[in-house]
Image (cartoon, rainbow, N blue to C red):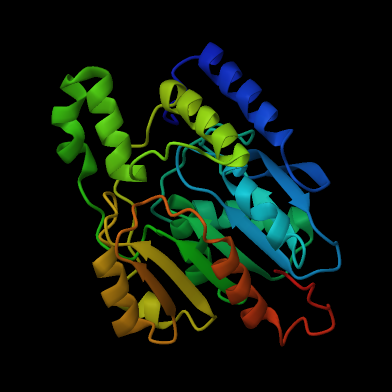
Length: 298
């Protein structure tokens, strides 16, 4: 039996309403796709020129594809984007949580690729979505033309954040704010409109979702060494969930071709990475898709 995703049906409905409201801010024309898969229906947002190089976006835990809102305008100027709501998370895909160990999630992504008509694509993943991208690239190396990973799970040691956060749970609203600060960093006084919309949605998800309490599988040394595709990892030195120094060290040892951007004061949430990821994707896919002209950016 799959673990519950939301605390109640009413909570789920409230999150879906908030999600739909955020999607009203999507900055470019989009297509909404529902794909049948081995794990149930999967929701995908597609945008960008249909003939452009394909890029699959995989969000993190306790989130959905609204997380990509700040990145879409730039990335869709050059790429065909497919933002996938991960199964078992706070999106519009099936509310099932199969084990992360094994190939179930890779088979599910096979179904997503097939439903979208993709033989090959670049993968961009955040946190748990980074693990998902790595797992699929490990098992299906011919499918991944490039990997761009932001605070990815699956490489560096996973920290026991629940143990560290437990004392704060006894301190009410102040304790909750401190927990959020440890993960996301201090809240800015003024948020851009897109992040303001996402922040409200994340608050709604935090109240409604049943968090995953799991150890995320790590790729072994040999698996990292076999990742021959272009790889970018962006990590924060103050990440409370993943040992980012271990991520950096393991990539240096076992995937020396990887580009690692280590942000010393960065947390598990790393905003303002749109241009860095965009530039990496352009470099990585330029040869394979040279016929598609690059749109100038500021």
